[in-house]
Image (cartoon, rainbow, N blue to C red; front, side, top):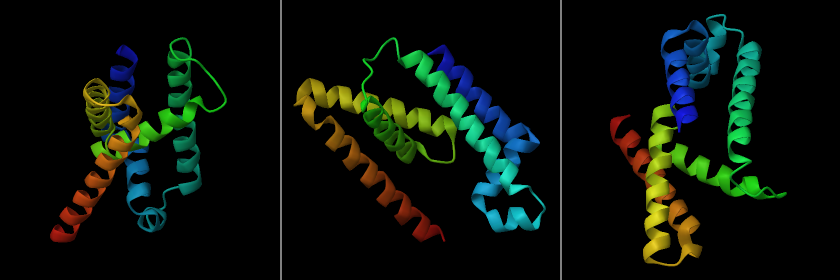
Length: 142
């Protein structure tokens, strides 16, 4: 839990207060505009890849002693991680953590009150609802 808080707050602070973090956000929002402003897109892509690898390494070090590891053990983690980010917001580390907590609570309730085999189906349904709702909100605003 401490690693989650440290990594999330570190990402949030770096995206808000550092030049590289702001450049990463600008490059993801509009690569053409970022290139026209002279931002080094290839270098920013390398930084983003390195950052994601670093966070993945932290997750691997912390999860390997807890979970049994097999050739496909990462699939469920990746799917749930994407669902959490889609629900909480792809642009915010804090939103993704909130989405992860929400998905964890919902999956726990589904497993407790229903069949544990439908946890993933319920999570995917929630992701679809969140994406459709986000599309309707963006359509109404824009």
